[in-house]
Image 1: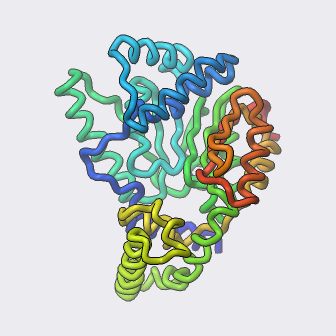
Image 2: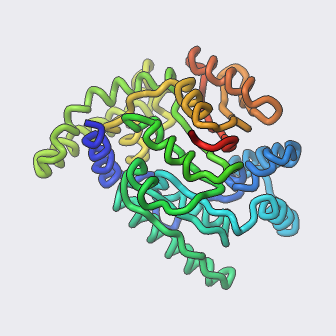
Length: 349
């Protein structure tokens, strides 16, 4: 049964590779400074002022209201690269189409391995890296180092094909889709070096109840995915109806759901990912945290945004920040999916 659910996910991401941005669109590395391995290492080293500075810079970059001189930017990169040298290995679990390029730009020399169960997502990721490698040769006279890809479900690939150990593992938007999150969480922790970093993004539990109700309404469609011809017609019709409904929400026609789903914009893939995903059982935030700590992981940072308090950042006290995020989720005041950064504190028993 679990394998059938994973196969439905594979079919979903082959139909809707995520995120499906145009080839020429490159992730903005300045807006993703906190994804750099150096950010987590600064937290481990207790250099909280510099880590917080990086967070603030990334927010300002994402809003388009900050510019740094080339000298200031290079100085920042040197700080992060010294904290996270090129000898460290990086693993991207559920890498999708954009993450490999983002991490290659953040870490030009590190060994990077990406895992995804969708062949089409990996194909798009490869094409994107190749295209921007050519651009990089023209502009900087440097070719991007290769990113290795492993095709398949992470629960199978991690134990069998992801050889060696890693210093940094990124797993964004993956655990909450799993029939059993532990089937991925455990082998990820096994693959981490002692003191290694696991960076997770997990879904809000209470805040996504409406999405899960909509997904359940379309769940019967995915039971037909083996009957390819009929399935494709069925999925196309349901998808067109969803897109039309989302368009009306975007325009504000429905007062009950308009504001809730305007965040999706008009992007086809984001609408499908939020409202048609075949596997989103909804795992409570405390469950994910408890499973991680039982495997010997120590929370060193977390972040989320609450409706009344704004950004909750775990620089000084990550446990207190996490408790606030969980409470905000219960009150349906959590506006973002939380990010957690763990350190592997001990060996997996």
